[in-house]
Image (cartoon, rainbow, N blue to C red):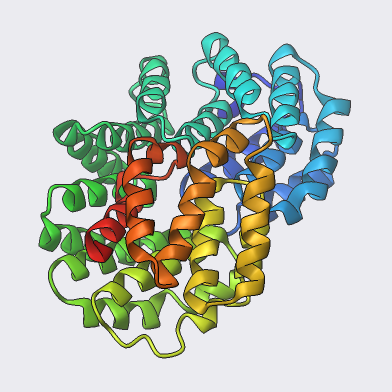
Length: 401
């Protein structure tokens, strides 16, 4: 029996489809660049495979790109037409809610799925993503800990759940447990970048920057064929170089490893670049035309996917002094803040005023921006991301005070 059918029972009875989908999950967990193309082959051979449509839909939504809204709608429609059991139908409801940006409902449905089927890896990954981008580390860890006991010790995907647990521990400040789980997961599978990422975070949060750089350097050779998430680990290395007073080396690393990938127009690459450049700017480095090289992407400051992402695109606009984009982005945040969904509430509580503070930092009223960021600090976790990513806003306070 295919692995997927043992732990996420599918309505499909096509053994070839199910065995091939095992391969898709294997690739997904290992950050392969071939995951979606492999899925396309399966869908071409078996267009009635509901879980394939659902998986594609979740991947499109987690890309946080409004340009994928129509393809996501197509996957959702196909899933509605083919879902053949209660779990698949529940996933349809979750994905439909997420497509409408009702992340509260999405999380509730995913939680119900995991209560019934705690080894539903697709639900667990989607739930993890949502908890991460609402800054709820405790809920993120709790969902993983509820799932892990249901995975047999010899299950080929279990170590990846341990790797997810490592990051949950790290974000909750339990660094010893995070290291133990992270190392165990990477030992089991060197391509588990999420686990390796958790270990890097621990080194960064504990100020052990040399060890963190060494860890990333040791892991990098294994990631030659992985997707863009490897760039985020290189970003972590650059932050650690800055913390070691080697900002020039961090800038060199930016030029060598974090520029060419920007043409993929993937949000995390732009977030990496924007936050790193601003950190280097605060170190007094001459950045030349590097900010202007990000102009092809900052129109996405007008997206309404995640407040965390929109603020990073906003950073590029304010650092380039593009008043037209700044005004459009600020207007977008104002409209977003009026919406009742979770990200609208986040924008109302912290996103809009953070955007205004970024303008102040760059347009001669820095102290007002600092005061604003100080007042927002207790709620800043709500934009999501990690402690290491949100540390930039504390850096702003210290630098511009």
